[in-house]
Image 1 (spheres, rainbow, N blue to C red):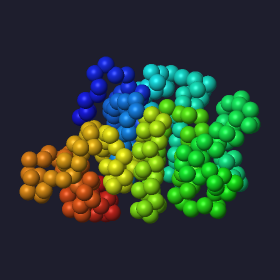
Image 2 (cartoon, helix red, strand yellow):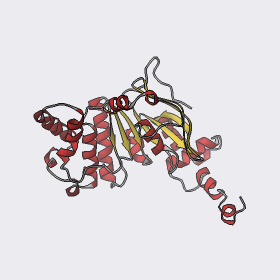
Image 3 (cartoon, one colour):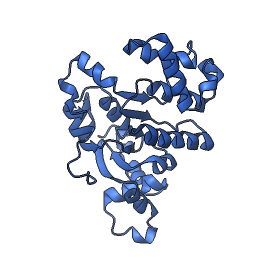
Image 4 (cartoon, rainbow, N blue to C red):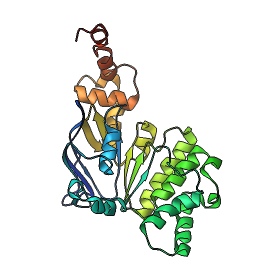
Length: 286
């Protein structure tokens, strides 16, 4: 199921019939998705649903088994390494850990992409670094090492580095993971502010529902490598808010989505786990 896209609009990312297989395991199966310019799309699902693999395919660190990913109108699988590098300079990534270089100051971490991929004068790079650190509220901490700052500040520093080359797309891998509720809310607000100020497209992989419903324009739910639903935040919120008495008409996929959104202990997801064939597997009868 796909949400309606604006008529005539060209997607900034388009995924067609995407399949990824590792050995005998199919991790993604037939994923179709359009990501529109300027929107924040949240990709969610339980552990093992394929969302991290999906992100790695989008950023080009994995190649699809079959299917097609287009970004800025270019088929990623048709590009050579130079072409991929050109595309990569147009997006930024905030990794789950922040992925800062521990021996570098925050300013040096943010400056690194500018030194690697531009021919800007050092003075201009210093100005750009200060601007990016100011955007995330860390300019006064520029000289600190990652070991001298908190987890939330590391996430913000990682985001400043992701912004270094003025990307058109930002990818976020579990931006709220490991943070306390207040710091998580600050990161959510920062994502909203940057999306609005910089007019970037944001793709956020998360299983944190409070964060997802705060930042999303649209949401996509993955389960066992397939897309269960793509829709607006309001569409998912209506499903999450249904009373138990109103769920009789829901199909299996909608019940799975509702249980995940609500974090209920009882439902089709847990029922599926309880009938997973563990006893047969243990006794070697399958």
